[in-house]
Amino acid sequence: MPVTLPSASITEVNRILQTQDQIIKSVPEVDFVLGKAGKAETSTDPAPVSMIETIIILKPKSQWRPGVTKDDIVAELDAKLQIPGVRNGWTQPIINRVNMLSTGVRTDLGVKIFGKNLDTLEHLAIQAEQILRQVPGAADLYAERTQGGLFVDININRNAVARYGINIGDVQSIIETAIGGENIGRS
Picture 1 (cartoon, rainbow, N blue to C red):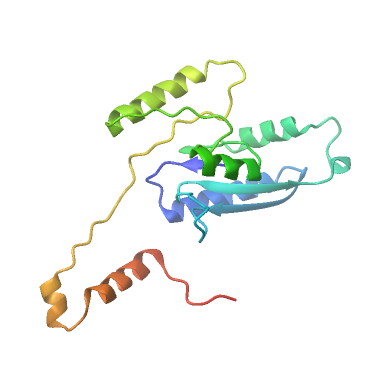
Picture 2 (picture 1 turned 90 degrees about the vertical axis):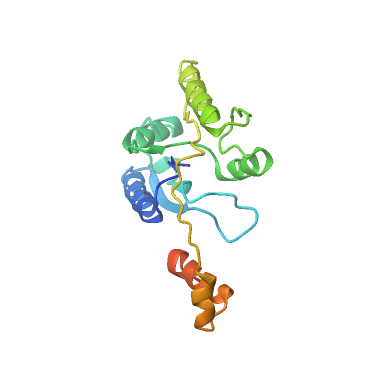
């Protein structure tokens, strides 16, 4: 469950996803890997673009290197997947989805800090991460970055649009398609 910074572009997240999939596939015990970035078209998927979900299917244990355990595979993958700006979280797909939907936390264990000032909250979260790193057995720690996303504000000149006889909804639809694309069919 890799997570990037909120300012990562779709192009960069896709590049990271593809790179990670290749690295994961290089481990001999891995049979199949499938990564997904962002939200699926369902109300049960609250994932932002900055969150990658990767499903790793391992080969039968009889095909693993002698003496290798699941923990060894996770440790090897974690060591190989140290990419700047990306935090790895190791969990199982179903419990991860249950955790996300019930608590909003993307890991098996989380700490939530509440308050009004986003700058202060982010600073405190980073401090909590540094403190928790010192706890024996703590792994996959990261302070979720809630700020730093890049946004584009588009102000439509209503008078100019009206002069051409175009309605605002059509202009917004074109902008939405230009920025995020659009599904034109399903098979």
